[in-house]
Image (cartoon, rainbow, N blue to C red):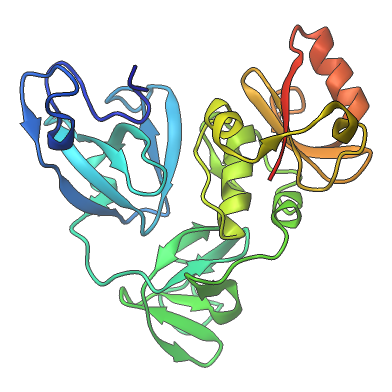
Length: 280
C-alpha cells in the first residue's frame, strides 16, 4: 500500500515515476518550484479553509504535478516528501540555490541595513535564504533583504543537542500541521528540532515511530535518557531528563515541559497507551 501522504497520485494525475505502480488517468514529470513565502500552508484539499497537513518554509523546493486553476498547486515537498495543495502565490521558479538557513526561532528580514525599518517579513527557524554579501551586522540576501548576521548559519551547520532546540519552543501555541514558533504540533517539533541538529526526520508521528531509532528494552525504559522519544497513537514527546518531557500538545494547546509519569498517566486516562519508546 502506498501512503497517500507521501505518494503524489490521484485518480486524475500522478507523478511519472509512479507509472506502473499506481492507477491514474495521466502521468506527468512535474516541475520544481521554490517556496517564496516565509511559511506556506500545505493542505489536504485546494481550499484556504481545508485542513492543514503541514507547512513548507521559505527556500524549500516543491515538485508541482497539477494545478486547479483557482490558485492552488498540487505537489510534493522536497524536504520530507509530503504531498498536498499549496497556494500558487507562495511558489516561484527557483533562482540561486540557498546558502544559509535561519538558526533562531524566528527573525526579521529588513528592507535595508537598519533595525529601525519596518520588517519586510518574519522568517522561522529552518527557512533557507541565499546570502550574497555581508553588510556590517547584516547578511544580505539575493532579494535585497537584510537579516541579522548571527541569526543565520550555513546550510551544513547543525545544533549539538536537538532537545535544546525543542526546549526553545516552550510556550509556542499548538497548531495542527504547524512547524514554526508561531504554531507547531508534536511531530513538527520533533522534525524541526532534529533537522536543526542535522538529522533527517519524517513529518508525522507514526512515520517517526516506524523509522527513527531503536525500541528500548524493558530495562532501558526504566532509565530514560535525554533525546529518547515516547510515542502514543497520534502523539510523540521528547525526553529531557529522568523525570520530564517536552512536547507540543493539544491538552495545554502549547509546547510545554511536563513530568513524564504525570503525562503518561494523563494521556492514558484519555484513552491512549504508550506504543513505543525509541532511542536515536
